[in-house]
Image 1 (spheres, rainbow, N blue to C red):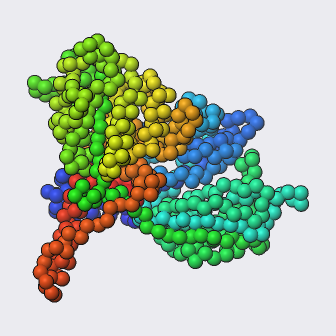
Image 2 (image 1 turned 180 degrees about the vertical axis):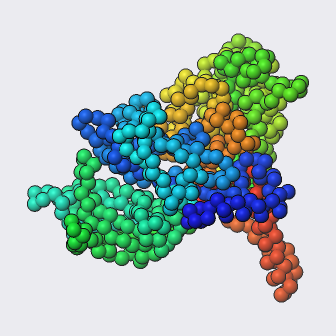
Image 3 (image 1 turned 120 degrees about the horizontal axis):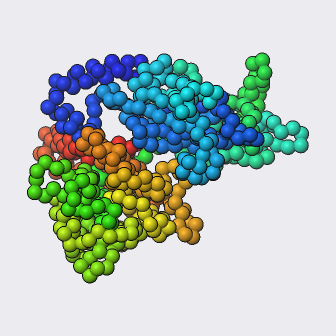
Length: 606
């Protein structure tokens, strides 16, 4: 890959060349969301020789990944295996000019399904930098796990990294087995599942997919599934793939039933592939066949397909609803250093965390809202009537809670601080319900509006189940929720609401949310970062959440408007005029999308 061969040197050359056009690049550098010396990288994790934490069973291992002290995700749990290979991929931007510390904590799962790491046994930790990983031989780095700063018999972690080749194509596929070899003797039949691995430049194989197992069946038909071509083959139709068939065993010691090598280009021809079992001593033996029942590569619509062109072209718009925590734990707003202290008279004090969050996120999202009318609410405050409200308009107008633009939000926030007394408790359900009602009205009016509720809070939530109920209901609407935690609380409950670990939220009736719509970030994690980094982290899941809504509701993007056809004359000259006008229109659109907002929102459109 590019990074593994010349990454730091190419990046340095690009940075030197970029100095020639420093004036244009400076705008991007100032935002903290774009660097000319960066590359999108994905890495995989495997472990070896993990220490047994339980007397009578093997480890149920999973890993938690941190970049610069911020958790970016967790692997799946691999049960009963001391040398697990995780299929979860981690994707991030590698910045040549930054120190990006990587910390991986390996755990043995003790309480199934629990998000609280205190409920699990720590196996050990792995530390490196992204530069160390990318500059290692073959971009593969192995280190012994340490515990309390000491090495020992804790096992090792290996990271495999590769530069991503972005593409928007997906593979819809289904496989079946035919006369597979039996590993369960004459009185039983194997329980087959398959894995797909992709090759690396050093000849090693990385697992990228695992199917379910089918009990007692040597002619299984596995359920169909869909994978991105990037995830499966890093965008390369001819990259070697290896399909391995295994006999499932409860103890995790699965028996190999055979393997076959192929490629995506071959799979789309729907072949019947001969499975070969390698016996001891290297002897090979026929072990049945894998039949490709379906393998169709198709282009997925992208996020930009839905927002390109603005309201005048029937594109989707984003509407942000702001919810601000007015509970007493924020401290006296008149006292400097408290979370709501506002220095409106000048004097050098920086904006408070609420002001910084409003400015950072609203300035991005208002670019995708044609009228820039933003409804703003507070919660947890005591009004002039001495009653506590968990959803009140910041501008004091219940019939029209809208304000115009970022400055309008700030003005309404400052005004509300003079009218409402901080109180409590911290309840989210009512304000989520208000935003959901707005989104529901947009659906009923057939408006192409996606609602984004921004909740800024300092404390632990006190109506957790009611909030879960509200989130599950909101997930059926064109809506997402961004929660920014300010102050020094642990925010454990917020992490539970953010469904990144794949557990999913359930309402009080046991109904699971159809999609993850919550993103939680801690303000303090980005308080010292370059401007724009908080917005990037808070918004980076939004395009994917929107795409899941569009797909689940079979919503197609608006048709491309060819306004350029009206420009230019008749005859041959007119044809040239049309072509030129189309190029100009697209270039202008791309230029507009080069802003901070576009950089954030395009981060995960593929």
